[in-house]
Length: 105
Image 1: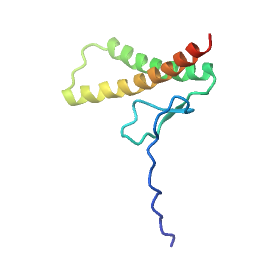
Image 2: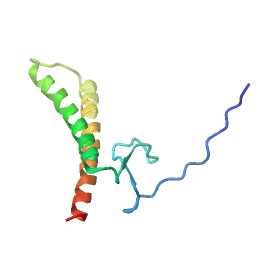
Image 3: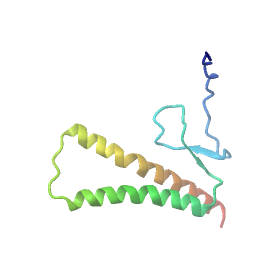
């Protein structure tokens, strides 16, 4: 039987402007696991941001098409978080695009 080995101690990544990978704001702890490749082609970054933002827009538009939607505060809070995470991710990617465009006239 194989025994499991414990993981090596985690070294917290310290953000630096020259780092290729930027942690997403929506990481749920101080040990980020989701990153943006800041050197990816601009069109790929734009597609990633566009996909996330439009997904949230689609959900919100579908909610608007319905009559009344009744729910309690816990469901409303969960729904808000469901929308906020991909919106924040999309905005993080747009920030990377903006920084890249400002450095290249």
